[in-house]
Image 1 (cartoon, helix red, strand yellow):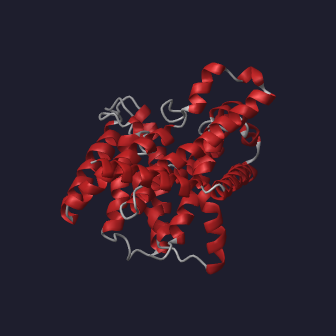
Image 2 (cartoon, helix red, strand yellow):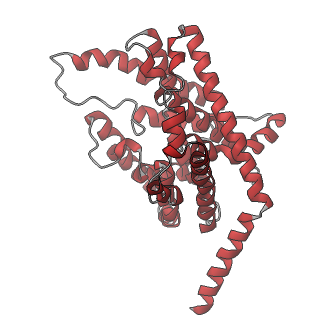
Length: 360
């Protein structure tokens, strides 16, 4: 099957937006502007376009792995990739700023999954272990039955928690394995039944813009109402939670905007070159030491700029962080290739499976 460079582009765009989202909050931009000001709402607008990106990453996993060969060695390779940064950055901190390093924290650096050093990595590991069983379940259901399942999960996991403002089913607002499983099933459904093939990239992009703007518009309308004495509900409606219907719709729209996009031939090589480093951007800039001691509040001074200067400055800084991280991980990817780690792990897995089948 011909490579879909639109899906590769989606990985890159999603990760760039994730970095932007993190820099708005952890970078200190939002806290540096006056709440309710034009600059504040500009920050919220930028965030609204980025909330859906965790969903698109999980949808991509479902879209790929419903047809791809499942290998546990892929999980081992991902764990090694994480170790490069947990131990690598930890070692640099120990060398140059030993006061920040503690032996008690060493176990977190060695076991980033079980210690939940990165929430998405830990949740993804759990999802990956379930992929064969999720695929078997999808193969056992027809299109109508799968559609009903997804609709029921939408009601339980998205609609009810968003309208009630309460995490009734332990979804942690989408930051966990349960929600990633739902996104996986959705992406797999798109691939299995070729959903959305007729949607043009332009129409999907318009839908993405509209569904990203709606949470901001609704916040402007609902925020004053929810503070009023006559407002009958005590919990705020979840407009920008990862699992909210509008954020979910925004993610689906962005998914098809990129998937169905016509990528120029000149852009294919750069996209293919950068794509292997996409997940590494997350592992680097979300490392606990960098997040806490380097990136926290780093962009707060930008909140003091005028609105016309603040927005491009914030986006430019986010792109710079993204560029440094992705080029670093592309280099790591090529080192792994030189060491032929994937081939060695695949061969080890094949030998293990062959040995156990022979014993049986």
